[in-house]
Length: 411
Image 1: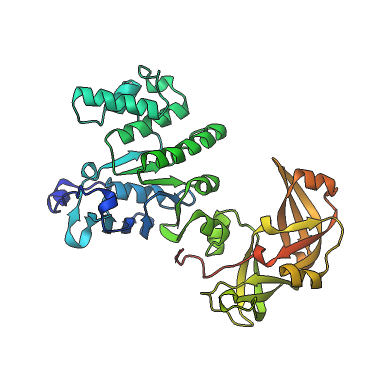
Image 2: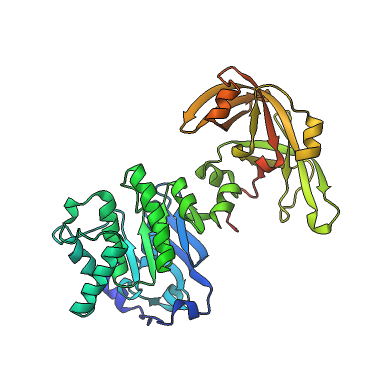
């Protein structure tokens, strides 16, 4: 809902701190706690992220765009504490609310919101408050930066989707914002254009050094761009961390499915033992986990308490799994060399996916696992539906989920 004049009059405006960001004492770019009740939906978000390119990632309807709009000051929250460095943008307890126009934010909505009756040059210049000479200099600088030179006199309808996106970014940067907020900036673009503009956005962020927060539901986009990921679903934060931490070690099976880790099994811990090369720092707890009559090895995270007989859920990093057409693998050798196990199975489905085949293998006990195999290797080993194969599963392929779905992890 939009704030009424009476609500606005009852809230104290907070002056903006113009101290350069690098000199501010808080290392966090954003510290956010927001609660907002809507019909049929509760946004209850809390996170803190550092400078860089942060991605709000999650499915459609998760609350990502609503969170972004709340940060931008476009909508009030029932309860909120939003800080940017030392600046307090919203503190409902102290009745502080900084209006959107005073937050020095560059905001790019999903549809870009370009003015159709203005030229490229006029769209970019719209938000610049400066002398005519300075405005022209700034527009020329942005036209060059965003590779729009020569299109100054064109109108939005005459531009491609990629060009419109560049104009929207240039207009957002024109007022020299202290942070850039991007709502699904590539959603309406074709795949080749999306990929090219992803690279351009990353290069732009590094070149201009401005913090960015971007919304996406595309896992590939999040993986390619994020310094920090904030995983959001059903109005809550499920996990915060680097893209490597989120994609390789999702906290729950819910996050795992969102980032493409679709092979998740229920198991029971049958054995726990320490593995070490003789130094205290090298000690690592190894769990043997029984799943549908099969046994796999897994490294137990140091902060995770685990007991023998415990029921757990595991996810499989299938890119760490290998398939063999014959059976040269001996479990005793694998255990000593790689902490791996060999399991027999049969290929029941094959899916060509560009340079790989995705081979779905049925293991003993009816378990299914889909393993990516390079096309050349797939052909050389003469794999096909019905092929008997051996699956090598190292301990590095087995990930132990840390908590029930819905709880928060910060990494």
